[in-house]
Length: 484
Ligand code: AMP
Image 1: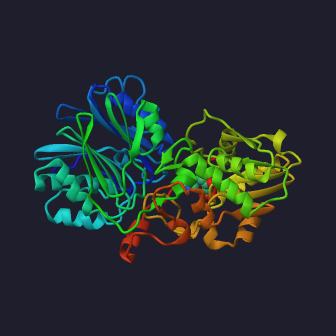
Image 2: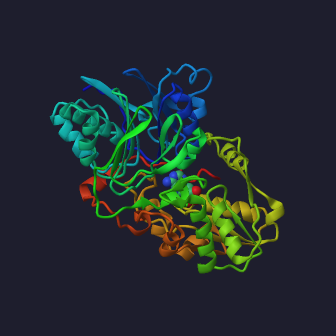
């Protein structure tokens, strides 16, 4: 088995998309889907197209529009099947090797794999495959998945059977889109349903994607979510089989998808993301009212929650910040003066709405507390009389092993300080976090259970201490909270 790409980092929040249609326009449709999913990852992007039995894979660091600029997209081969991926931005190991799709060649064929999530037994699988003679040079969990699938395709002599056997051996979070040289698009979601995956259709065929917004972008009508543990095989623009291949005792969508990751115009497992965030604001207003003049959200993740808070409290909803849509990713400036300026050009306080006001400001989470401190300072500098911060998730205290990139546990502010101490540190007049029950109740349309392990420390998957050590031993991101 030949390894095509190497990686030395586990994969984090990402987006996947795949299309199988009856016209040879798949690359452009995946490009649009990736643009719609750009919020899930800005570090790198890639598209793999199937042309007859060959796979052409183009991937690079950068935003989707940067990777596929100029004639790059035009020069992609024509094909009826394609998959794509966007990768989450971290400062460590930001190399081309980490960008997906991964292409794995084996004796009789090849597959391209796009993965969202994080698996917890990659090291064990890799060791076993190495003993069987599979050649690795990297530690990426997505590469391990790709090689495991290829190995099982050889073993079973069948593409779908190979995927079925392989995914039974994987533990953790995975929403997978696999394109085979035999002309199949195969979708699999792990048995808990940690990360979203849905499909839509139109007269030309089928699109699968992390979020329904991607289907909207390509004119595919939402059909349904892939069930936890389900494998769907698509060929010739049609679903040819759908079966449950992994069974777990409970389901658990990552609740942070609704709090932060997903776009508000997506619907995930029956729950509108916008409605969930609005409901969180309503709930926060009930649980933690404030004596204030107005409500505002931190753009963009706090905005829908602010609308809910304003609706319930009767306080006027105002804009406290204007976000510059043209800044793009933050450049790492060498000097403090340049860094401060970069911050202000991205999110500028709207003094007119802030000066002399007692303001309720909503945001999705406080992780290290750096962002909140900057937000509060900006509000106070703009003349806010009082700042009351309301957070639409409970205190963030634990690691995530299933695809949320968070700082080391010891850097999570809620582990070091009490809520009052955090309030003092970030300089707010009051600080309150939604209750765990309140957050879950806000997502009551969701047809799945939730994983809220980053707030509770309880995970659906048992991870032993050895694996925890491996999973935690990765260079953590500094990208968290690059809003300000
Ligand atoms: P901080 O408290 O400075 O670590 O920043 C928290 C803010 O970062 C939140 O309000 C979110 O908008 C954003 N955020 C939370 N979790 C993540 C994550 N896993 N990746 C990137 N940004 C995040």
